[in-house]
Image (cartoon, rainbow, N blue to C red; front, side):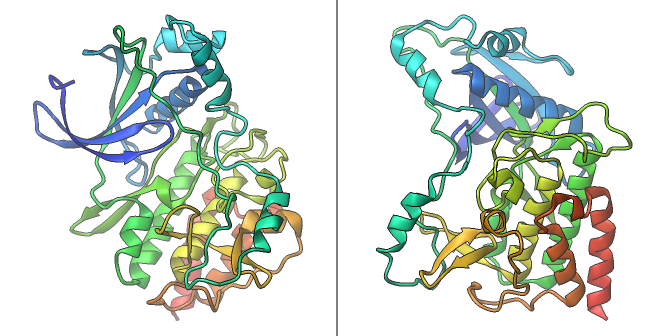
Length: 397
């Protein structure tokens, strides 16, 4: 790796891989390098989806993270650059066969493969609500920042990198080399700064443009959330970039970029941003991305935050308060349980100080349209950017 890139430090770790800050050996250019260990076929399928989506987007939109190159690790110090448009045959074969090609078999490995990284329930899927009801009875106080109930947050299953200490690594990891974003993710960037209406409006417009671009290419992201929006700080202001395409799906046979007829069935995403139809286990379309954007936009424009279970870090996210308990419920879950639920935009309480001015009437109307229970009534991505610009202009007068 050091012949191509120098890894400086770890900057992020998720259930599927590790991200390092690095530099190109020849030019010294700073890059982000993501290592994805290829330990089982389910995770390999996700990695190939991410690689393919990033190759399709290439460097064609300023608000979508750019992929510089991809390398396949076949030994402890052996890296092979992948040619554009090609997928590693051994990894494709692993997905098709349902077992890692060339892997050494063991009962422990097979058990872990059965339990780790299931595609159907790999991130933030719905758990039994009976456990939540038991927990609500024991919660006596209401914190300043609303907290997520215990046993409600569901993260991606922990990925264990399986290195055989008795010999060389198997076939082994994908390394994605991407542009480096020095502003962190959307949570880190916005919550570390005082509210700024102009910056918030710029973020909304940039992400509308990014999602319209992705949907036009037939890519449904399926996991839009503040953690998956990265920020590049520039002299002209922050540039917001959609990242992390591990759960994305690409569709073929689109008519004029229309994704409304392409249906998906895998329940995936992050619970505070999932659309009601995803919560309910129904088939869904790219309009689920519009709902996720609506949650993010509402949270950013009003600076609404919550605290995830097991952490002390505030996160941007809109929600519905659950009775008098002080616990919060994801919008999608609340709307799935009651499709006639009336959302209160702007939210007049539970906002993290200092508070920005609430969104104007036109933007409130647009947010309610984006968060509609019926996905067919949400504005499509190719119309969203124009509607945002029109709403902001109308509210400014």
